[in-house]
Image (cartoon, rainbow, N blue to C red):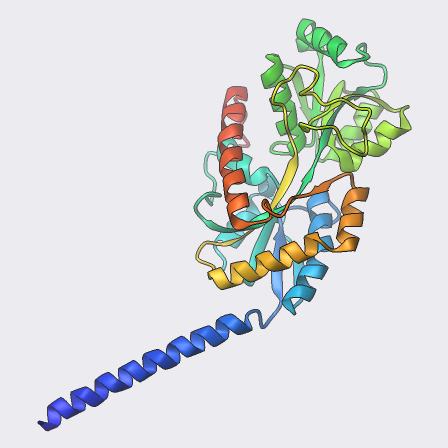
Length: 333
């Protein structure tokens, strides 16, 4: 055997040994993940519904992962800055996103979206659903949904429909309402749900579709507004006497402010699986369940709190809202 062939053999052995060591190191890294805090990015301001949910589940998720889950608010551009940031983050599992149904509506609302919800993320799982209700000012002429339908169809150019701004879930709910009713109302955008609700109760606008986290106290008060129905397919345990819009004639009407959790595309499956496990631990936490119930919201079932459950739901929601938004002719630019 020549000296050169011997050298080549030793070189090949060295490469093979190096490969084995590299694989071993990779496995160790995967097993030890996470070894530093994880950042959970929220597209909206502190104190808002999505932020409240994020901070609520961050604690038990951190306990499960053995690392702190830091909540970071990255606001602006109708909730699109945060997803764009996460999509471009290092895909090591240390930067993740929680976002509501805006992930499904943004592709139709924005002509130039800096990310693709269906291609630029790994899915972790759904988190919870927040129902909505349809309200009117207290002195609105209609007293039930049948009267509301008749009045709106006869006076649609005179009826005002408030929302919390372009891309807000209240605007999307209102669009679906108009789409299924076959009417065009005068929409009035506000800078947030709070001001919209204040003007509804003050009699400045006629109608508003908003989340139960804000409307349940007003409905139970019974003096500041009228309620015509809930937007979910089934009645709410917190408002059992209020019928759904679906059962009153708007077949298939189902709007929930659903939330999902995402990671940048290419995040290792080991990291996604560990985050998903921590999410499911958080959804079973007694304090989380208690607080979510107090917000008249619903934690999702175990089969929805999975990567596949979120992927299927997002795909279906993107297709559904694309039709509604395009039919309404609304853009955010």
